[in-house]
Image (cartoon, rainbow, N blue to C red):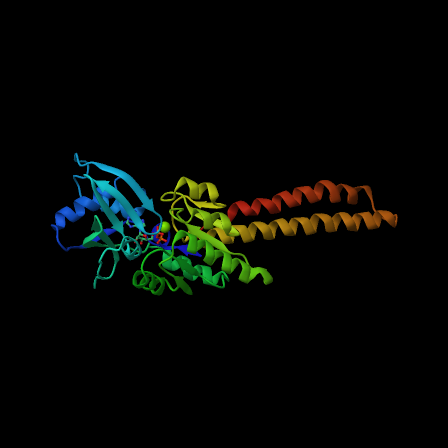
Amino acid sequence: MFDKTGTLTKGVFDVSAVHPDVIEANELLHLTAHVERYSTHPIANSLRAAYPNEADDCRVENIEEIAGQGIRALVNGDTVCVGNEKLMEAIGADWHPCDHTGTIIHVAINGQYVGHVVISDVVKATSKRAISLLHEAGIKKTVMLTGDAKPVADAVAAELGLDMVCSELLPADKVEKVEALLSQKKDSDGMLAFVGDGINDAPVLALADVGIAMGGLGSDAAIEAADIVLMDDRPSKIPLAIRIARRTLRIARQNVVFAIGVKVLVLLLAALGVATMWMAVFADVGVTVLAVLNAMRTLKTEKRR
Ligand code: ADP
Ligand code: MG
């Protein structure tokens, strides 16, 4: 299972359109940049970057981040909400859809709808290859979970060749989806891995059998909750991690079987009175040396692809 924003996509959004309703386009960007002033969400970083003179003397107070929906804050005494349709519904603003494809960030001042900003993210260069290598490695099902809107989620899933996509999820819905899949695979011996950046998905990173976090973009909570951290944020490192893990386990098993097998054999020969001193030396020191040499092969897992 993958998170979308920041995991399969770069999490760096470009503003592709500004559609103000009653205020100036510049004022709309000014407001979004202010409300997002202290947020660490990838959307916030991008909206701040879209309005260069963000640090003016406007007062921004009472900032409240609503996970999976957006942000509410007081800007110069007015309540400004910046977020998705769910947030607009929650405050009863009269929002309207946009015909542009992309993530639509709606804005309302004191409950009145004032327009939206369309932002779009790009898929990471290695995401598609990562998914196909995972299928090749025998991963049965790849799923994407996202809080973003359905059209955006479906487009990304189709581009990457994912088996399943769940969109418009709140952080709590993500937990539910992971729990459902965890209980589904109880009867088989499958494993569930979740890959995320920890922004709104740290709980599922901890819940999955294997949690994989983005080390660069990821939050500290994600890195703390994860079992594996990808330091360069490239999803294509997941098939590599699986290859390294499988090879390491294979070599460890070979060593266990070999060491115990030789020892049992020499023990039996000794019981029958046919073991020599040199056989005993081989069963002890010889086996150790061979096992260590075999284990050293784990250092050389090919890094190709
Ligand atoms: P994902 O699951 O793709 O990583 P999130 O759960 O972090 O997405 O966010 C889901 C949606 O909530 C976003 O697509 C956006 O519409 C809205 N959202 C979340 N945080 C913010 C924010 N700081 N500003 C505006 N919108 C936000
Ligand atoms: Mg995310």
